[in-house]
Image (cartoon, rainbow over all chains, first blue to last red; front, side):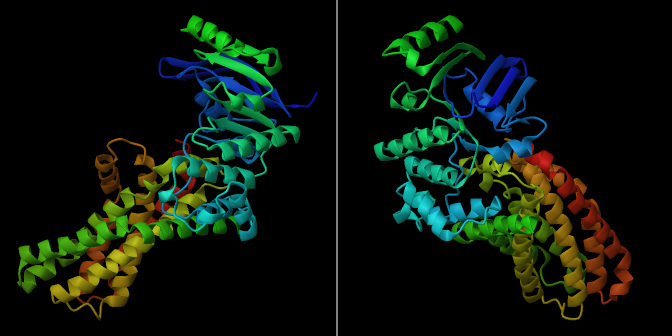
Length: 238
Length: 225
């Protein structure tokens, strides 16, 4: 069995008196893709933010790729690829300029041919010189995925990555995630969807009121069982 | 080298965005010219009164126009959560501070060129002889204002009342810079040599070093929130 790339122990996060994560324990190993389900306010985004080092835990420990998220944030950042709610793109730059900026800022030294190849992967090559201001939300999401494609992360932290994508881009993302996990990377994907998105994960974790209420292999949950268990646990929790 | 490349990436991106949107440049230049007209109408053609208040007016103009630009330094980074992406990119975050500082220096330099030229033309002030010294005072004063303004711009970027909070925080800290720049400008415009204002220049230099070093040291913490 491969080493854990995400290791969470007794993780708690509170904003003032509001407890968002309440003593979470979770291990995701290399080659594993975990789908994180839960109602609004369950703590999915907060958990991803702590793992991405954007937020700090109140108590407990979280390690990503062997590094402590609170004490070794810079090393963690070098190991993770993040797709968040925001597309992380500048509206007044073109698609190519956005990729140029982010690769320069990350000191990646990527050639223009590689940047164009990344745009081509996401069917954005014809929009390379078009300002992002004119892009739809789905196109902006594809551009942020092109950026992800250029990185070499060991862990992917994804918050609703399929949101706004058309069928072609969804298929691309499914294939990319499958290849990423097969290559030994770990994926933690928060989602509200119960459809094809969950086909890329091998394990499902349901979060409610800051606690893990279900952690089961995907292939043990058939048909409407995910819906049933989700409704059962999240209603219980609320 | 990596720090310089990252800094250059920030400057390149900010200049490109500003060149296309022209949001800050247009507002700041229009505001500067407007201020100048107000001063001109208020003071009239009384050269004696003008000479007495000119250094203060010049720096008031630079400061007020600068406040508009400096306060918006990090507003761009809120677009599509780019602030988060800057934070997530591994590497020295001081490069973001220095890059933003360079962008602000460019913007303020543009404002100053316009303001000084228009001051000289509209108010019929002879500044040719004082120009070398004046340039030095402008450079040191602008660095001080931009250095601390960039830091406070980052600190207040996520605050709801940032338009109120930014000048309230910034202006008290800028007192030594404003005092030194106004006094040095006054002396230079009265024809005194540069050596006569060396104590003000030393104060400006010291303030600049303190502000830039403080910015570099605490910017990581500010960016992390």
